[in-house]
Image (cartoon, rainbow, N blue to C red; front, side, top):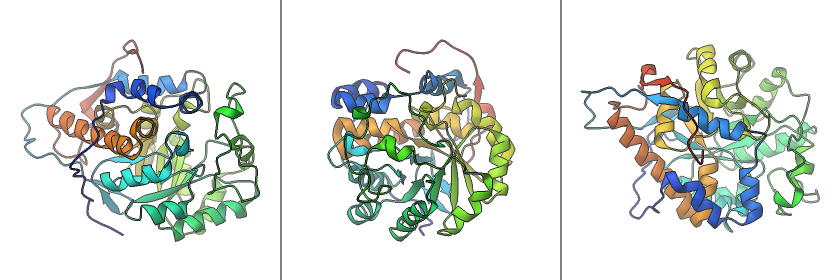
Length: 366
């Protein structure tokens, strides 16, 4: 397992303006793909972005920032950025190469790609076509636990170095307004669906286990022996119980605001989870992060790294692999710039007092 950061240099990064990213993606994606990636439960996705917007930076001055390091520990290895690609489904809706484009972008940036259970490319094909892409596997547990076990065993055999167990989806929770044709449109979902299964995402999601409990975590971890990240946690008490039950890390997430209407923004939930785990594990966070400044705010609140979901999907819709890599490159450039302006020289040592919460009206487009 690598212990040094992978290079991020790229001679020709695709230019991405993060402030215009949704607007540009809207023109690059067809209607059904845009509807899918934009879908949310009530105002929860909007609240995620607003939560980071309400956090205001309080820069330190007169600090030596002649060298700025974004090297970050990740489950015993290191990443050149405190960023992971969050597990998002069905990348072939965004571009023809789908998850292969995402994995190649991850390889170019050196960041870890968390491959979705609902990927439209098999984990084996991703490993074959992008062998240098650092990757973890996201997993749901189905009512047939054997199917889930086979999937994570396949992921381990294909070089994934951690399992990210999503626990906030006990059966489908997509609202009726999300029409079936706006989802995967018959694309294969080879990581979860057997060859003879209905590939429809709603059918598969309805098979997720509704009886999963903390008592199951140790067994799930034993399937591969890989580190287990529990994703979908928004409460400190739940985070502690996950660790006590065998989790190795926690991902604060409300599923991109796609599940529970009126759900707490992850920027608000992060504080209580970090306090509860009290340094026992790494903590990641996703949901609404739209800039390097947002990533810095997450680090100030105690996150080890931020997971970026929709922005990478949007980048795929703009320019495939180059667009996805352009998004990652832009996040890294913005993070380094804002760190220097805030007097922060090391992403591993961001002071809590760098941020304060100040309710402000939401900006257009969040």
